[in-house]
Amino acid sequence: MKKLMLIPLLLAGSHALADQPRLAVVSHDQARELAAAAVAECQAQGYAVSAAVVDRSGVLAGFSRHEQAGPHTVTSAQGKAFTAASMGRPTGDIAKAVAGNAELEGLRDMHPNLLILNGGLPLKVGDAKIGGIGVGGAPGGHLDAACAQAAIDKVLGA
Image (tube, rainbow, N blue to C red; front, side, top):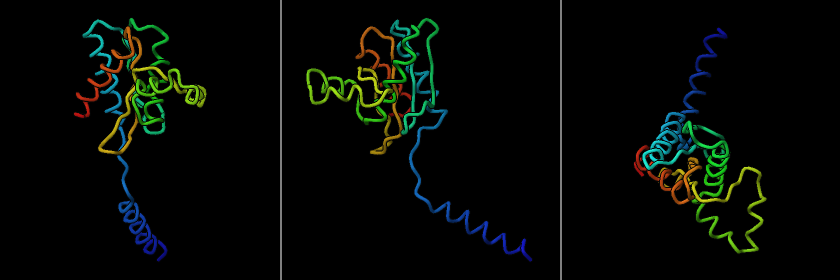
């Protein structure tokens, strides 16, 4: 008898879960695709880079590194991805806003994972923030950002 009563409870619980709101997320497959596409785009232009993708919480979800990318590019890519996801804005825009603005200079020290350099872009589905992508290693942050944007266009079609 107890087993029969448990079945309706289990079914009711699964129905309740199905009614919960769903959040857009960057899947691990998408994250790996995005990182690989960014590295490939930069490689096609002659740059050896690293690319990192983080989820909306800033947790690493995908990573790729060209075998000739410098060791500093690993943390650079991750920091840019974290910053773009956390702030919800391109890191190049943040860097421009902070440059020479004493009121915003404190952003650089707000969190140890923030890296305020060009090369990080937020990942969005519609208006929903799903994460960030960061690229490090090209000879200029604008080039890192261009590789990140190319990856977004290729994988997410944005």
